[in-house]
Amino acid sequence: MAKHKITLLPGDGIGPEVTAAVVAIIECAGVDVEWEKFFVGAEAIARFGDPLPAEVLASIVRNKVGLKGPVTTPVGTGFSSINVRLRKALDLYSNLRPVRSMPNIKTRYDDVDLVVVRENTESLYAGLEHEVVPGVVESLKIITERASTRIAKFAFEYARANDRKRITVVHKANIMKLSDGLFLQCFRNVSKDYPEIVADDRIVDNLCMQLVMNPNQFDMLLLENLYGDIVSDLTAGLVGGLGVVAGANIGENGAVFEAVHGSAPDLAGQNKANPLALLQSAVLMLNYIGENVAARKINDSIAIVLAQGPERRTRDIGGTGTTSDFTAAMCETLRGL
Image 1 (cartoon, rainbow, N blue to C red):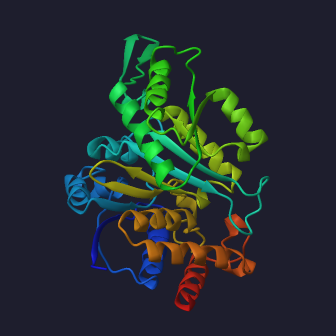
Image 2: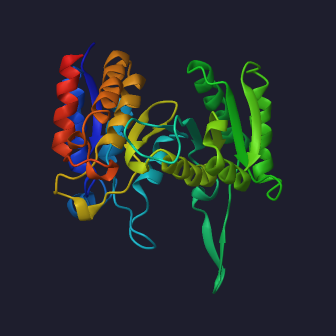
Image 3: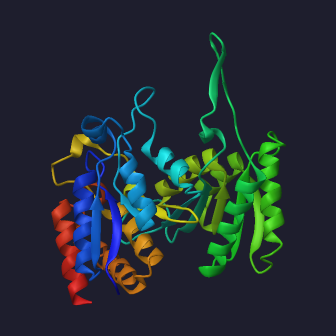
């Protein structure tokens, strides 16, 4: 296929290390990519005075696809989340998180295969907060028919395209009857156009209990923004944590694929970081840009490498290897396929 232009945001902490590993593996898979590399976060503030420079957004708009490593977000103070700004600026309204069990990663459950779809642009993440009087802060939860309908359509279209049989919408409409009630009603309205897909619902607290008891009873989950943020991390914990799951933020005119774990600055520069989360995000990206054969080869190679000895896996998933050991094993396996 023709060369692809992709925006690359290595991030900070362990971001540059895992990003370099993934770029090398994509090259070993035979995908021809011209990377447009940019700084974001604290490094971008130091260089340009803005954690998300305008040229970064322009590059993603131009290329319609980006790959992003982890970026440190200050807690309580400092600049706002780069992820939230990217989603708002580019209208990346759908957060997609496939969650699957993987070979040789010890967890409490076997054969977990879930897809979490999270609405990405509103709810409490609209960021509309103000102080009413000293000591009293009000935060507004925004739910609209437009956003709720389009995320439901995204979920059902994904289910139809990927042979998923059931979507469970998650809500708290027993308490928030207007906001969550609207999200639920939009889901039910859209479901009528997809009669082959089972559509049901769960209250969010009950869902969390049910996931812990038996995650295999669910297929796809659809959630508004805050619930989706929490539940997607919960489901990641079922298969080994944020270091092994993919993440994608998708809009009508582009997408950014990212590792959803933190930047782990205490591990930076030590060749200990696990590239698996960003690599699986890159697999989603390759499918998105039509490089389906390469995506399948990388997926197959991940399964092969993880099934091998501990020296091929990083320490966070029970191995004894380094970032470069895992990368070398992936490239060796890819060349043999």
